[in-house]
Image 1 (tube, rainbow, N blue to C red):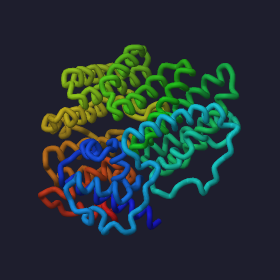
Image 2 (spheres, rainbow, N blue to C red):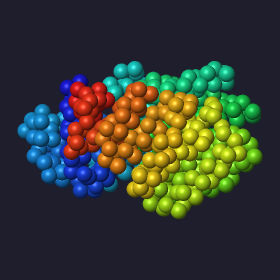
Image 3 (tube, helix red, strand yellow):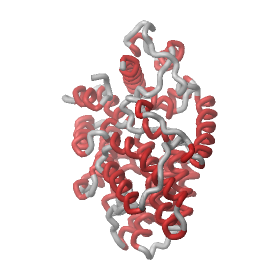
Length: 431
């Protein structure tokens, strides 16, 4: 526990120093030889640094070493196997992905890890990362029972109970994989849909926690969805895979992929039309992150028109809404990504977040509002939005991205009462 607390403290100090310097994780990572994803995990306390590597960070951020670590170099946690420069990290990721492909085909023959193998890091995705490439052995289960387990996991996601979801997913994925492998005909088709849905949840959890497991989970979701032959799970799996593409720097490819998948969907079917809307919204935000304003706004307009035909509430197949309110939430996010947050103010004022049907979606909407006010340098409104996030979904407020935003607010020039207590409560700074 002492090592974990030390890594978390160092990560928090690094995040605060970066925020004061006005640098992004990508900028710091480029200077010290890490990927932006690795910097995010270091700041979250999930990756450890040697003394020499911490010196590199101190030099890059222009601050004394003891200010970062609260130490003169003694007692620093040792180098972890995940604490590698970006090029080595990519090599390891590719090797792990290959291992995962082999493990998926032979999961029934592999031994089950013991319960003690789950690390007590506080990272909801940690169990998933341990088991994704080595699923515990499982026997096929009746489809009705498998649907119940999937619905329970879906309920955990919608309520933003990410720790519970992380614990449930390994068993769910193992059972769904075994059932799919042993089924035939119509039952295999149904089992493939359930397996795809389970991997979508795994990818969503990985994305929430900035875990590299998201890419592998999304890829497997799409493979299972295509085996089912049903366009709805294919569309939902395509959405989460595109998000992992965008986060890895392949935004334009993500936009092309999403628009092709959306074009292939039959808009005449209610649920298919809803999935098409979510694909267009994700494509719009992906285009905005690449500063393509025309494409982003055109895709938003297409999504808006789609919801004009019908508004689809979340069902068992969806992890997002397909409503006008959700379009407005994405509109705020698009304006934030384009660097024109002021254009989202009127949208935020008309936004009825309480009409959204799940705590996870309401918390995500308040997150986009918080980012808008933060970009506009309105600390009080930013903090108000962050408190709404915590009220809706406490675990959402502890996500790495939210902790970084809280840290930025904590060290802003204008002090906002209550932020320090909020930061300690949500893990942005050591409690």
